[in-house]
Amino acid sequence: MSRRERQTEAAFLRGDVGVDGAATEEETRDEAEAEHAKAREQLLRGRTWLGRELLTWLLWRSEEGGALAKLEGEGVEVLFVGRLTLRGARGDVTELVARGTQAPYAAQVRRALDAGLLVHQARLRLTHGEKVYEVGLDAEFLDVRAAKLPELLSEAEDDRLAERLWLAERLSALVDALANEFLAVRAGRGWKKTVAAMKRWMQEAPAER
Amino acid sequence: MPLLAGAVTFSRLRAKLPKGAASDTKRWLLGGLRRHAFQPLVPGGEEDRATGFVELEDSEATGFTPGAVFQGEHALFAWRADAVRVPPALVKAELARWLAAFDAEHGRPPAKREKSEARAAIRQQLRNRTPPSTKVHDVSFDPKTREVLVWAASRKAIEEVAGALQEALGIELEGHVPATLAAWGGIDPDGFGPTAELVGLEVSASAAAKEATDVAA
Image 1 (cartoon, each protein chain N blue to C red):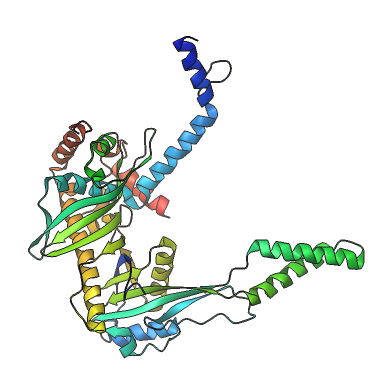
Image 2: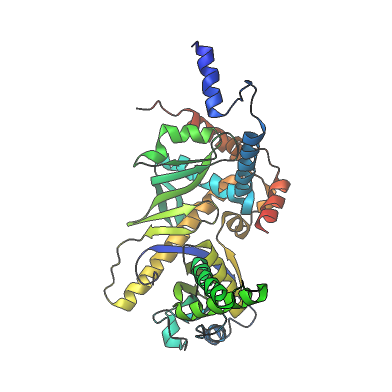
């Protein structure tokens, strides 16, 4: 069997072409169109795209290290840890989940971002002064999920509840501080330059090791 | 009770208080909670779901004394939802048994109305035997900062609690979502659309604003 025949056979087995060798358009196209319509709806619903741009911007900025925002005069440092979910509304891939300790900063992730996917869910480690928090965030609602708060110092039960509540609200304020920092950049005149720098970063993804 | 221990998962909302709430916050808040306190399902009753507010540390208590609710500046309470769910497969199996017995007794299949009455009776019997499942979601509210945390993971639960809070307290709630944060910061979220270079789609600011509302609605 020649190479061409093998390719035709494989295309038939994948369902890309029918027995006559012509492309099987309708069903697969309908399915793909429905998927893209759903992905587009998810992107635009409640301006989820703004949350995705925020998380993607944070990923880009956090790679350099250093404080990304300030809360009460103290810097907020961000590190993406663990699982990262990317979503997009065009192309063949509409969702990609990256797992692994180094996954958020991996070259594969940067290439996927360059292809039009953006960060939809992520787990962040936030350092504010001596306190370290971990939090799962999603782009649509910025809800706090499965967060780890710094260790409680109080011993009495009532005091522990008050301290836990204080830390939870503190974490909420840190997320808002980062979002506000992004929004100032996003609404500013320099956003186009920032996007160009982000795209360069995505395209300069080093070769996989 | 996640507020006291365990996984830290919550949704963040900000309240717009009604007129007069600030003058006697405790009375206003406790009154609202008491008026929308949890009422348990009545055994043998027809309702399958009961919801309402309960005290944080005792999901059976609805007295809402200031000492039970206020911890410093915060009001702490919970939303309780009890539901009885009769598995449809169980109703189907019981009905099949009844159909066979009816046929054997009368020598004919039941009429449509007889079958429908039997189904309702079987469902009610099973409902009376099924214990309700209980879900409790903690809520913390600081009337000074107007920040509300709903300690739940499910969006459906968060929206139900938010709706109940708005009804009980006459407040308006907005989530800390990016578009709202922008508006709070004086940035018009309708002023820009998605960045085409990043999302790979050309959507104008006006179209994005329209679709954000249309889809949300």
